[in-house]
Image (cartoon, rainbow, N blue to C red; front, side, top):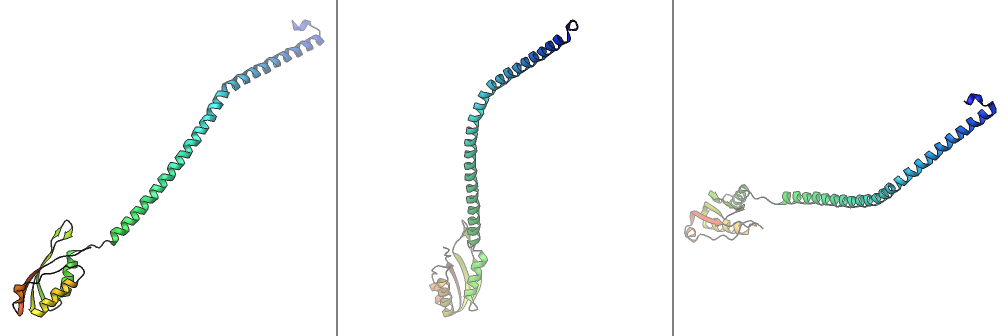
Length: 178
């Protein structure tokens, strides 16, 4: 049908056709844009609120991370202090006490037997059986034991002091650990 129209009218109708197609296209695009905008405004508002909530949670998490880091540092310091304390506590072995008694006895006292018993990880009084060459050596030994920082007051065996030479004696020596 369009072929029956003169060329000038045909050109005008084609022009009007494309203008209307473009107008409808732009109108459809505008309607779609308005619809998308209307649908995105609540989402944008919700996301803006969530951003505030999330930033607050991130701040809380950062403060918790700071607390965890501080607790970790405190734990590391406590472990270091415990290691220092464990290394610095003196452990008194039976060998330590026997060595000290033998050092004090020197050559004047012949030690026959040393009995050391531990109870609740603490040493009980040491039972020492020995032979002293003279009464003076026995008294000097017992006084030296009493002056030692790890031994307490020793009761002198009066029955042993009756002899003058080759005195066999047995004493209990209390262990003093502070």
